[in-house]
Length: 365
Image (cartoon, rainbow, N blue to C red; front, side):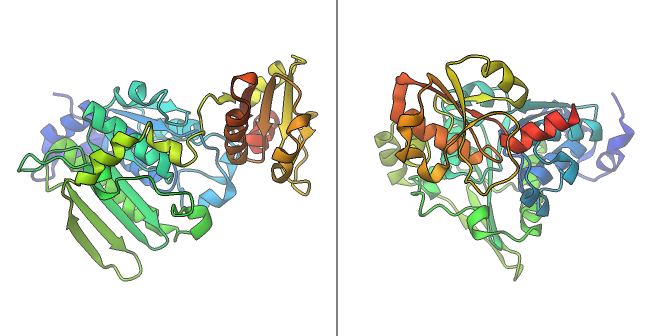
């Protein structure tokens, strides 16, 4: 028996002890999203000693993230969240394994990634990806610990786990169909109180620990809501929804209804690779920022603001187009739309992390 003093408080905890800690050591958990919810989930699962933790996130760190994403600092701006999270979490607990997956989870990679883990934790703020996670976990029979936040309220639930009656519910039993872009709120548009994802993320991490160790009563087939302004909470029972199967049967792949182009045949070009690609005369770098945006990009680009992009498609002459913006978000969306327009006629890529990431890496060098 290996006794690690790091976990002494777990060993001495009634109803937990060495056996529960050993279950944590043997567990493999995938966290999708390393943002507001993902940061506390990752930090506490790491501290608890979960043996193998995977992180899926393709985004880079922005200043506006630091109000709630406490794993990062100003020194990390422009870097990929996945890379920074792996480094810092590994420093916090070098006895466990942290694996980074710096990609957008989609139908080309979901099975391969999710199949490596025992439990999946949905910490995303993207509805399209949320349904991809649910559908993949349903296919592979993986427990899914879900959470979402909106302004002052959070939700938590556990799906794809049988309750005492043998009933298994999925996210689609709550929301069978992907909402339209107009119906789907997000933090950037509607805001969120910075402490809320910390509170909900800790609850989400607690549900993961309960599932792994068998302690307590996990929120299986239950939806818990919590309001941070009033501290009011309630737990609602979830039952199978007959509409779920009907809706799913009519969808080719659910995320085609909302930004499904994201990641579809769109390759990521990383900052250290950009000069190599631009040696080819058939490759062009297109800066889609508006004319007033700073800083300037030190590499020569074709400047076509996103607001005018689809009025100036005739200016995109090369066979391979690399889109670039400030942080990589707009360029990914624009690349998806361009790919839908050009089809196989052109290769479309985007610069991961955008200009911020490029400048950060080259400054460091």
